[in-house]
Structure formats: C-alpha cells, structure tokens
Length: 286
Image (cartoon, rainbow, N blue to C red; front, side, top):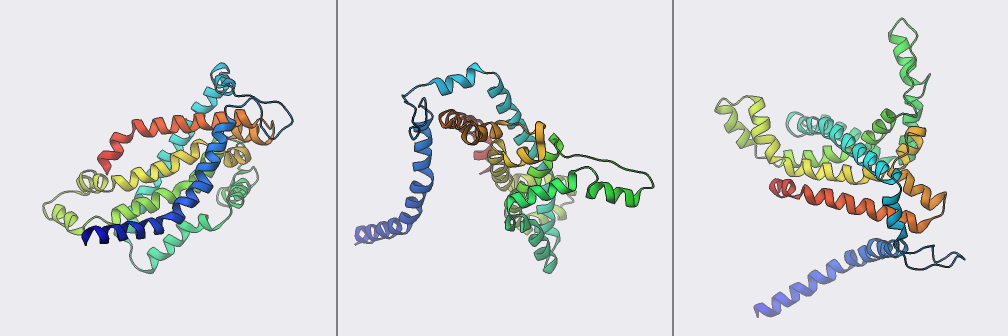
C-alpha cells in the first residue's frame, strides 16, 4: 500500500515538474547546446561560407592578449560592483528587517524594487542625463555652491560602475532582507541581555546567520555583471570596452558567431571555476 502511495506521489510530482523542465529544456539547454556547437565551427552554418569543426576559436582567445585582458577587467568590474552593492545593500536590508515597520517599510520596498518595473535602457539613459556635463549634478551643485561647477562623469569607468550598481543593488537588498528577517529575535534579545554591544551582535550573530542571503545576492550580482554590455556600451564610451561588449561585437558587428560563442563559453567556464573555488564558503554559509 505504501509503495502504491509512493508511486502515485512520484507521478504527481513528475507531472507538476514536467512544465518547468520542458521550459528549461526549450529556453535554456537547447540554445546553450546550439551555441556550444557553433563555438566549434569555422563559420556559422546558416551562412554561405563552408564550415568545419575546429578548435581555432578557443585557440584565438589564448593567442590574442586582448581577450584575457578584457576578461580580467570584466571580472574586476564585477568584483567592484558586487562589493559596493554588498556594502550599501546589507545595511539597507538590516534597517528594513529590524528597524522599520508598517507603511514606511512598504514605501521603502517600493523604492527598492522600482528599477525592476522600468526598462533597463530607460534606467541607463536616465543616468546618462544625470552624469553628463552641464547635467543635473552640475545644476544642483551650482544652486548650492556660489561657484561654477563642471562635473562630467559620462563616458567613464565611474559611470559604468554607477549604472551597474543601480541596476543590481536590489538583488542583494532583497536576499539579505529575507535572511535577516528569518533570524529569531530571541537570539538577539539574549545577546543584548548579556551585555553584548551592537558590534559583537553584528559580527558574531547577524552576519553569520545571514551569510546565505549575502552569498546568494553576491552571486546574483557577480555573474551577470561579468558579462554585461549595455551599461558599459552606453555609459562608458571608449572606457566601456569590456568582455561583454567584445562578445556583443562578435555577434552584432563582426557577425562572427563561432568566435562569439567560444568567448561566451570561456566566460561561463571562468565564472563556474570562480564559483567552484568559493563553494566551501557557500557550503559553510548554507
């Protein structure tokens, strides 16, 4: 009888999971398989050029120093953006989870998730208006200070970082908020009753207990930022050439899909290696 019930539960679970797995197969695994196949070709199969299987696309990455250099710059950019998001997002999540209640929290949550409700291009061009010379920053400072101010951050590394932080900051705030909200208040009350200062509570209780949410937010930021191309392209100008823009050029401008696919899978492999090396920390957090 138990075997029959277990078998029925298995069929029920399989039928419920089937649409999700079907969607993953069609939308994720099949396109990735096609891109992996393209990365080993000498030319795209839908062109008039003759093609054959080759490793030249992967070899070109190691033969031209510009590719590893841009990959290193992109990983550094991802690390900088992730660090800034963590430093800003964790205190915001703590205030939301532990200090604010009622409608004030709802209003702040609305402001946090507001970027998700707007198109990414709208957000990027909004920052272009703010950061350009003779823009909103200049006019605001001139209204406060009795001197002429000219701050032009457009087409710079700083502009790229600002745009990426604004786009991905909600991820770490939401994941850290959920982790902090799940901490039992009685644990913190016990620490306070024993005379523990806030610094001890933060580093001995709050941070260790909320580390899973912090790690999840960091991963959700680092992975997409490493391959980002819209923010660097629009806000960075000549300083916005990174690995993601290089891959975009191969697909859009040069129309060299095999090389673009190979560069994409090299980025994927490097990111997976980084996540694998950091997996002991993630397992400890879990």
